[in-house]
Image (tube, rainbow, N blue to C red; front, side):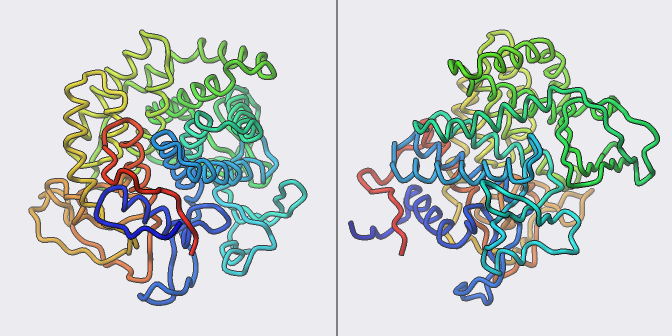
Length: 462
């Protein structure tokens, strides 16, 4: 029952990241970045990154569920349970069906938590509640927050035995897709102009806590009070990533309601809607193309790959499965990013590879990159490299940079691998969800062997 000294094995790093994250970077049970008072990293000054807490809490849930699949660890299952409870609160704290909070906390939380909610922030809400407890919560949700939560929910459902927790997942996922199925009439202001007449929209969720407005420019839209998952944005712009995300949400809803009598009617309605629309969604999904864009906005690729993991493994129709795995995942997505030294994308692809040889090659190329991931703490240290530059993009490397030399970020796999430099912040530490989800996905799919067999993986608090 004593502590086990960590060595240099990949499993050791996973144990250390899990321990560090749970000691420092899980305020009120949700993932955050930690800003310490000094570079000695001894006293927390404040947290940041909580506007993205839902996506990384969901991705951390996915890591723990994959860990449970790989090891059957009771500690992993306990962590899965805790994270499901936290995300269930995020899905229900606003009181609007299907609306997800970016981050939530009991109103009676310590000052270091309540300080995250400012009265000057129009999206910081002080009127939430869950089971009679007042909550603070962050709004203005985005698509990527949902994608992390649903990724984690789908994997958690497969390892949980507790019916109460499984019902949390079922109810949240089914509520979400039922909202997306609705055609609703809303009166939305456009670019700040007053609404003149209602319009019908589909594939949306809405909240009563924020004004309905759409700001649209150059093919990009920012929504408040309403979040869209439209395969074709406002009927004008095809959105392949949204089409993939939308399809995956329905796949998860069908998976978690299978064989559950209480959801028979809902499941039948979801299945009918899915059957009527999935071909059109996948036709949009096939339009996906990679854009380097001087290394700006690489997170859009993560928005595509995370839901693709569920989509490609849960589809059961043989014709659609071939389209998803061979055409969309292999020929479109993987062909574009296979040289990026992105371990997470490599494992998502390899887990669903249509061509076994290319899947095996992806696994082989990923291992030396994952092995370069340093142990915690994941300090936001300064980086300055002298590498050949992309002549059309100042400050951007010509070729992808190895993981061990790369600019440090909150989730390495959503940041382009071409940044040459970053000033850093020696007081800021990132939680390590990126290492954990990649490592445990590799273990769960048999891409990585246990390199410390017989070592207990249970985390013990200090």
